[in-house]
Each structure stands twice: as C-alpha cells, then as structure tokens.
Image: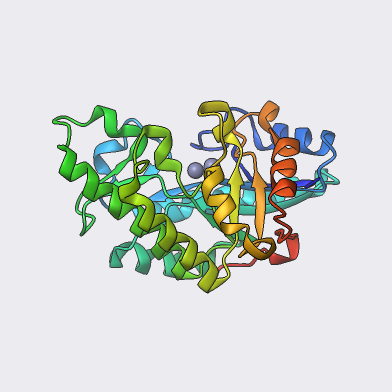
Length: 281
Ligand SMILES: [Zn+2]
Ligand SMILES: [Zn+2]
C-alpha cells in the first residue's frame, strides 16, 4: 500500500486545516507513513479583493502572499529535524492564466524553497479573469449567474485545468473533477473537456491524484471511476497517486486500502513514486 501522502493541510498562519503542522506530521509518522507532503493552499489573484474578509488565506497582493509563503516554508523547515518521517514542503496552487498572475508567480518561484507544487483548481472565472469566484463561494453570489453564464464559467474552469497541466509547474494534478461536488460539470456537455484533460495529461506525462476526500462527500473519489477507468489503459496512461487531502489528523490515509483495491481491479500499475516529485521550474 502507498505509504506516503503528499496532499495535506494544516492551520499554521492563515491556512485552513484544523490541526497544526506538528500534529499532522506526528499523526502521519504514527500511521507508519515514510513521507508526508505539506501542501497548504496558494491562492492569490488581483481579483480576490471581494473575498478577503471571508477568506484569510486569499491574497489580492502578490508581495504579501510571497512573504506569507516564505514564512510558512521557514516554519516547516524548522520542524524537519524533530521527526523521523520525511517532510516534503509543497503548496496546492490555484493556477491562473492571467498574465499578471503568471508573471508574479514566476518571479516568486526562485524565492520559495519548495520540494514540489501540486495544482488544485477551485475557481470559476470569466474569460479574461476580471471576475473569479471560488466554487465554494458560488452560493453567496448576488445576483446568481444565469445557466448560460454558469456553463461558460464551468468550461473556463476545465480549460484552466488543461492550462495548469500544460504549464509544466506541477508534480501532479489534484482532484480533476472537483467542481462535481457542487453539481457542476457533471452532464455530457462536459465529456469533451474531460477527454481533453486526459489527453493533456498523457501528452505531457503529468501525474494525477486520486483524491479520496470525495468518498466522504459524494461516495466516490476525484476523478470519478469513469475517468480513472479511461486512464487505466495499458496499466495507466500516466502515473497516479492516492491523496487523502487531509485537513484533520483522522483523515490521513482515508480510504487508501479501498483505492488500492480499485487500482488493482483496473490493473492500474503506473504509480507515482517519490522520485517523481519535481521542483518547479
Ligand atoms: Zn483542493
Ligand atoms: Zn487540498
């Protein structure tokens, strides 16, 4: 069974986990994991201003964001010597296509001593990103978008994942169909986009995770079984790993056994190994 987790959160600084980095690391060590990757959210964009009050981990100021991320890395570096378990430092990055985002992000990278980045897309957006909205916050929008607008935002969300894959920044891509938790992107209109995501993964040989948090919410992983099956041809089109996306110590390694069995049943043998972690360019 996979003895590591690379997608975990904690409550250091402004981040949204429920336990401290120490508690999460200790719990992973107690579980017998060889490695824990800490991957708090990197969510920064110049159009995030309306949400700052509600979300202390969002930044509309790229310089402030960079300082916070550096501080977080320092905190984790200082913990490393206290544990036997190998601690990898990463971030779950909300990638954006806007030139301003990419410029700031690329300027920031050399100053962030991380072991890896993973891509987690949580936003809907219009085409030029003059409007962005975390899918989770959609319910608070007033007025609510009409069906056509929502359809376009959902397409932009899938396009954003494809762009993140093609960017080459990421060691792996998280929860490919996260939007389906909120009832978005489920019907057949979106099948083409899901195929395009899978094609982009294959073309760039970018690994993807099977995120087990979905079992707690909608009784299936992310991506759904259909997508995993589609990608399982010839032992798996790209390497895959199992992620618990744990925000709580009790969630570390959740449903790993069940997911191992699923991969076995599908003959998905192309597995992610820790030497595939890459530092961002
Ligand atoms: Zn996520
Ligand atoms: Zn996450």
